[in-house]
Length: 89
Image (cartoon, rainbow, N blue to C red; front, side):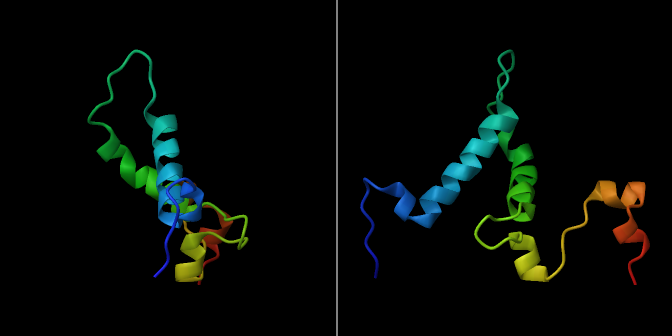
């Protein structure tokens, strides 16, 4: 069992990950003129998708790639017909 000091939340990876998610929510939800109290649930899939497909500095690949051994294909890639989608066998 590992014990983590409360004074150092970066030592706990779950706390650090929660901070990253909350920071992403702040960037997507902040609007001066609007009240966004219930909108975070609609934004959750986009925030999580962004974090899963973002390349990590430590590993050099995204978490999505580590699980599926392929890069994620975005809906825009399919609709615009990027070369990776066109030449897939």
